[in-house]
Figure: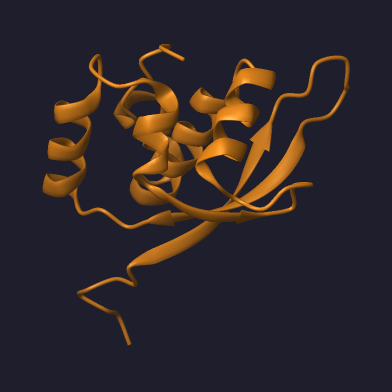
Length: 114
């Protein structure tokens, strides 16, 4: 049966670019589900005002597949060590919520502040 009210969280694989590696590394990230209006409000209030870790920590619940459990500190380390990680995480989030065909045009950009 189709659920009008989706689960509060969902998990998707995120492919992270690893410098010097031919293939990306996969990290299973669990995100908070935000509806269209809530998502727009969330990003409108934060983009350009908060750094990437602050923005992402508000939508990430956890992850699996890393050598450290999810925490704000681990997220900051990931974003510091892997230049494209913030963008790749946001693209995966947008693709999961809006469909892969729309991910490039509908996903809000990350601020680039770190």
